[in-house]
Image (tube, rainbow, N blue to C red; front, side, top):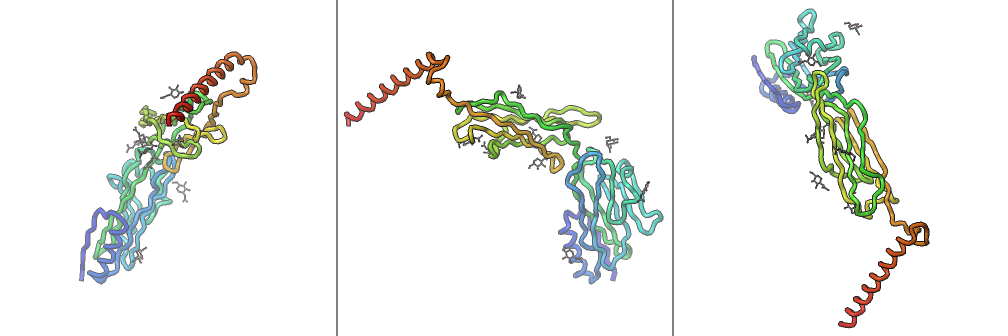
Length: 288
Ligand SMILES: *[C@@H]1O[C@H](CO)[C@@H](O)[C@H](O)[C@H]1NC(C)=O
Ligand SMILES: *[C@@H]1O[C@H](CO)[C@@H](O)[C@H](O)[C@H]1NC(C)=O
Ligand SMILES: *[C@@H]1O[C@H](CO)[C@@H](O)[C@H](O)[C@H]1NC(C)=O
Ligand SMILES: *[C@@H]1O[C@H](CO)[C@@H](O)[C@H](O)[C@H]1NC(C)=O
Ligand SMILES: *[C@@H]1O[C@H](CO)[C@@H](O)[C@H](O)[C@H]1NC(C)=O
Ligand SMILES: *[C@@H]1O[C@H](CO)[C@@H](O)[C@H](O)[C@H]1NC(C)=O
Ligand SMILES: *[C@@H]1O[C@H](CO)[C@@H](O)[C@H](O)[C@H]1NC(C)=O
Ligand SMILES: *[C@@H]1O[C@H](CO)[C@@H](O)[C@H](O)[C@H]1NC(C)=O
């Protein structure tokens, strides 16, 4: 009994292992199984990347392993000498003596190597079972420096508005910026990604704004602890923080200093106000 199964564009390991079960039940032949791709979600530009294609041949022999990013860039054929062939721009990045039937090692990856990678495994004749799986990798050029936090002023009375912004240097993709105030997440009032060209690459600087009105509850020990967090995947995780102080009415000056005349007036006015309020309250009471 001979069967030729062609299976293109397997979406995941799940469908690949389903195929394996199907193969065994339909044909009784134990063949290529459990094909999966293992590549990093994100790496920094300039680094070396290990990409793995895992599979279980069971009783089958390997015919080829091919790697694609759009077009084919790597091929492993055990029957050929040498077994490895590389193609195109990505082919020049392959470290051949570290790559084999299960792994491809790429050196000095660049942001334009971001994208969908596919691995295709084929068993030998008579079946030529073929399974293809894919994964996505981001190559990030990380911000060249730390975020910067600016605020309008450092002392705030209850009811004042805190305005500030956090600027993260250029990178690709732009950083995600989040805020916390005394450890509690607060939304940005705006986010801007400003594009500029760095060599051949488009990079983006990010500015995120903070804008909120303070309430008594927000001060903890008369302080506001503001933190700007900037992240590019797990590769760049920076934060910058600032402590703002609560400005309290200066009660001490009532006891008489250079400001005594002004404070005195203010105090007198509030006594009159209290007096009027007291009378109003009294007459309201007598109406009842
Ligand atoms: C495929 O992988 C699954 C889960 O890892 C495992 O249970 C199963 O035995 C594997 N099949 C073969 C044929 O290796
Ligand atoms: C791999 O090849 C490079 C040159 O292509 C050589 O310098 C290096 O020593 C080799 N490494 C191994 C582990 O064979
Ligand atoms: C990727 O960018 C590098 C420069 O960073 C360039 O040399 C190379 O040709 C580019 N490759 C592709 C496929 O665009
Ligand atoms: C960021 O904050 C500083 C200081 O308050 C201000 O001068 C600057 O205009 C702000 N930038 C933006 C884009 O809002
Ligand atoms: C800025 O870039 C971040 C990170 O990629 C993204 O989540 C956000 O939507 C972008 N914001 C704008 C206004 O383009
Ligand atoms: C923050 O933004 C999220 C998503 O846009 C929204 O659901 C939430 O209500 C916002 N929170 C505040 C305090 O504005
Ligand atoms: C300030 O405190 C109020 C009341 O507890 C709360 O609703 C608000 O989210 C706080 N604002 C910030 C920026 O923490
Ligand atoms: C930004 O955050 C979103 C949502 O958490 C995430 O999907 C995305 O990958 C992040 N982008 C970067 C560059 O870290």
